[in-house]
Image (cartoon, rainbow, N blue to C red; front, side, top):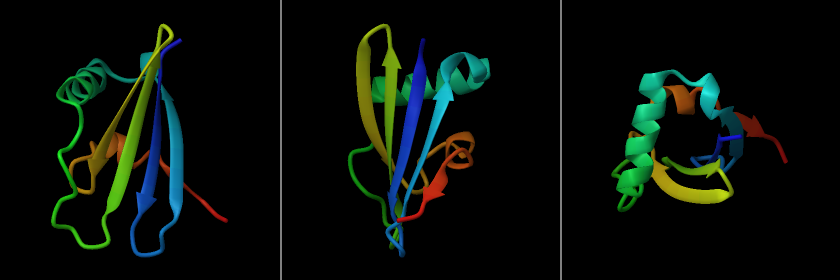
Length: 88
């Protein structure tokens, strides 16, 4: 089974947020966008957004695991909306 795990860190409060999405539950356009992100290898570095978030995306499929990092302003809306804060 193929899934994408999302972990958001940072921001002003420094809270962590997580989500897991099943690949087959995503639309074809969402799958295509994520495939492009993983093929590109993520982001070269944080943007200019102060106190922004860092998003670590991990794709697990067929025993292979790939992880990339994106920053605030680069993350697709459907992934950003999926994450939920984890309170300490």
